[in-house]
Image 1 (cartoon, rainbow, N blue to C red):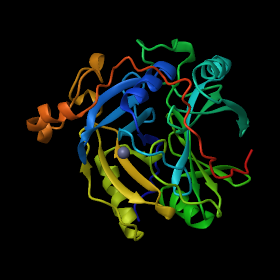
Image 2: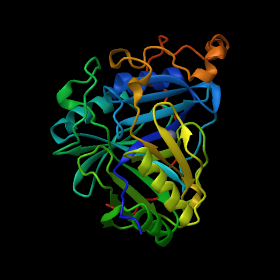
Image 3: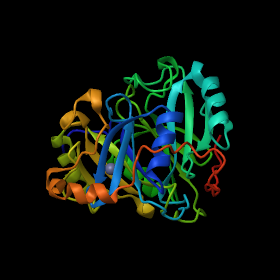
Image 4: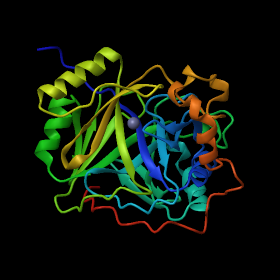
Length: 335
Ligand code: ZN
């Protein structure tokens, strides 16, 4: 038996939006995340794949979107990540409450495991949270962004998945993926992954056997990726998943990292991605996200692809008075 290995933290989270330009306006101007890569969906090259993060797109800070223009609204539900939580300094909590109340539709204040939480949504209904922490993870702030360094978001705090049954998910995340069951309140279970200093090292599972399955569409999460420190660690995960009779893909080259994919119960799509090579592999850190980057195989199609993609930077502002109707997220009986 090989030694115990653990997932170190969240690597990235990928969600779906019906408008690339409105998406960019919100994540840059309101949350102050940096667009660190402008590329296309490698499986669907006539659509964008946008990556946001800290100044260099450190794993644990990366939120990515597939913008499928005018896609109908989805419904968050079981088998999905139903909330994405960012970390910010505790002393900046009021700054964010006032900023989000001014710039978004509906902000609610709560508390979870002793930390203050802001609940809000992006312009297309994606459920977001911001959690104040006395010692948030240290990540390089986007210096040219609109949020002062002392208040900046420092990657993910955690993400929450809604699932039906506890025993099978405990077995997956604890026994197989090596996470530690850290806290529980009501039907919310919090796992901590290996690196407590890393952004995104918490993973929450809300168990709700009655929750309807989510429907993928605008404003929902597509999948979540956890970190593998190296290619060797990724292959080790692949063989452990196979040994547990979980169907897992071959390693896929995503240019900025390498990935394997598999499903958790209720078809929650999970990925394990390598930390490297990172977003500076095809452009300098100073100009990350400034121009469209394509994998070599799509370069011959560049003119055609560029003709099909909608303009990213338009005069589009955050649509302050056009809040998406938010569907109620399955009930969370926790704190
Ligand atoms: Zn991914």
